[in-house]
Length: 357
Picture 1 (spheres, rainbow, N blue to C red):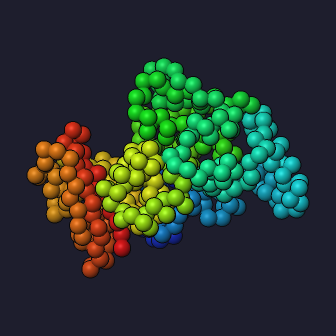
Picture 2 (tube, rainbow, N blue to C red):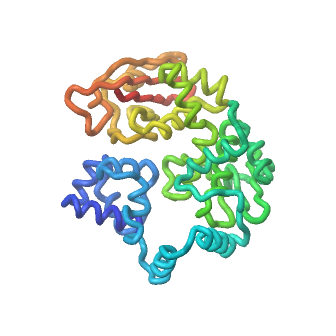
Picture 3 (cartoon, rainbow, N blue to C red):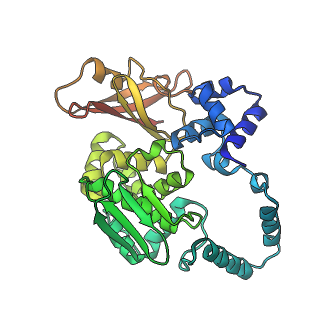
């Protein structure tokens, strides 16, 4: 069952119109119609908003709760019924054959895991990688993935060619080392996630938050876990308050990535507690939200809004406790949260970190 059909099915279960769902998810009714009709697919950001509205996981919206419900063709049903009666050894043999038929090769060192982030954890453990910053080029070398730098023009930030020998080409026009590192991590994810079966993957310049491609979303989750391991994040942010000042210090001195990337990794690690919003001229450009639905507009009394009415001449952080209703769609009447907003006049954008209590 497609994502659009799952959304429509779940909406009907709640007895909602498309307008009802749009209002609850912070989207527009025509957008819901496009998702359900298959004209377009929801972005990662939209999937999170929809999953929050329904009270389900994003995995449910992608695959459906019951695997049998997502199976349409008779051949797949037969395979699933056969699997019920196979021994673990025969399942492994079948899996190897499936990889070989799909790819022409089999990555035989890889266990069967459930989520993209689990594969990142496995690689870190397998190679006993405990020190930060994570050297993704060394990981690629250990996995026999060759990384080259070459001019790709405006085509992509990086391209992966999959096969018995895997090759990653990074665009030489990218000067930001953080972007290069994240691009390599994403493309390694496409190599290791077993159901990513294309022979070629590319990393475009647009934000992965806005992508509508499920495999790109999964590779992004893999990359976030690889460069900012979950256990390390837990240790660091038990010792340090979660705020831009500490995120900037840890990002620069320990993780060797941008503060924005580290904040997004933090949200990916603990979706109940954090969200990151980028805004410009009173408009929200991007959100990396957790399990709480973020509003579509900047509240005029928020710290973020104060930067647009009274912008400083140099980088500045403004923060404090604010009513949760400033930012959260389903906020309780007396609920508060910690807003930490940072503005740099060079970029003209505000980054806001929300810390839920």
